[in-house]
Amino acid sequence: MSEMTNPDKKKRSNLVYGGYEKAPNRAFLKAMGLTDEDISKPIVGIAVAWNEAGPCNIHLLGLGNVVKEGIREAGGTPRLFTTPVVIDGIAMGSEGMKYSLVSREIVANTVELVVNAHGYDGFVALAGCDKTPPGMMMAMARLNIPSIILYGGSTLPGNFKGKPITIQDVYEAVGAYSKGKITAEDLRIMEDNAIPGPGTCGGLYTANTMGILTEALGLALPGSASPPAVDAMRTRYAIETGKALMNLIEIGLKPRDILTFEAFENAITVLMATGGSTNAVLHLLAIAYEAGVKLTLDDFDRISLRTPEIVNMKPGGEYVMADLHKVGGAPLIMKKLLDAGLLHGDVITVTGKTLKQNLEEYKFPNVPHEHIVRDVKNPFYPTGGIRILKGNLAEEGAVMKVSASKVRYHRGPAKVFDSEEEAFRAVLDGKIVENDVVVIRYEGPKGGPGMREMLAVTSAIVGQGLGEKVALITDGRFSGATRGIMVGHVAPEAAVGGTIALLKDGDIIVIDADHGKLEVELSQEELKKRREEWKPKPPRYTRGLLAQYSQLVSSSSMGAVLLTKY
Image (cartoon, rainbow, N blue to C red; front, top):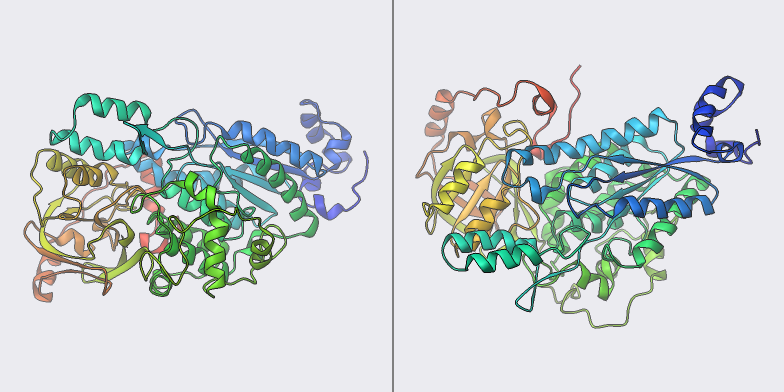
């Protein structure tokens, strides 16, 4: 066998494939056509989140084969494998949605399993729909070997009667149809045309939010998040990402060298400036946990209060990811924030250069962009798009996407439901009226289990014209497409006896985003009495994956990570 020039590049794979005693191991590789020369090179994985469940990741298998070209050109031997994918938009509103957040952990575990079992020297992560980008980044942080992520890109806008639409419009159209505001034919036409091809949902929903944050954290090549899935630039980025991985192996740069506390501050700043998905709070906490970085909800609120919202994208704004790409993508946002002194420019990235160096070298298109991305001195709103609320209803915290509603204060009577299905039916049956606060509980990480997103409910409320008149709070989650007066991630959750479990119909709830408060107007004596009367519900699942998950999952205030119990 030929010898490596630099054995350190193959430190891991040599343990599996090096030496005479590993001849049987090499035989398995040679059965697939690999040569001694191939085996002498760094052997690297390409983790592709792929299946045929939906359009979000359908193109990633082909993109993974393009990544191979870059790896081979730069002197590596690529080995492609797949991870599970849950398409949130399909699972939404059903029992299947309970598996969505669970899939984040499964993706991370799958990458760990394959990479460590086969001794790969590094890996490229390809991700699309919502939970695959954070799952991949959690694996990168956990394994801490040379690795890089490439987001697969969004779909192009759909069309309805000459106007651009996204899947958000279809969800809201269900509520409109239930109220007789649109015809069945209109609903069908929107259904047929909302998603014109491969890629994730077009607005600044969870997938695109996390795509942008791959760059903000320094784990992806500059500008790689925004090109649409069908854009030729995807191919170019795939090749360059493969080459970049081999450079990371060459210089020995690892994810935890990149994922410093300052890198997370940068990511949170970009999240707040964009008004991105509330799910990013969970995911950044989870990635930080895997990286050994202490991050709390207080960090999110601290940064939100100092960061202006400068991006105009759906669901709270007007534009989609394809529009952002035309004006400069994530680098444009980060440059404006860096120039204003709101980002740490000296953090290292997967290019081997600092964030500041990357932005200085990036070629920005010379086009007007103020309609999508404004200067910090002229923001769409003076503070960030997400607030952390606390109070007697959320001692550990709750998350509100203030960028998705013009209403920052709401006081009204509770209408309490113990499942998403009960609440959805009540909305469609016209039982929710102006000023109500819809409470959906026992949908948290443990109670659901799996912390379902409430997009079907929130969209129905908005579709009925109540988006600025009815509030919703839940220990579950929201889709990135959610808009309206919505507060999620209420912690402690109902399943562990959080205050949300004690609420009754008619209780007055106060949501105050400006002061960061979530309160129920009940005395301490009344809350104490109700707590003494409360009894936990039996678990919904006693076997299988969801039962296992419910036993290990932490609070949403910790990122809903799995905590091993010894």
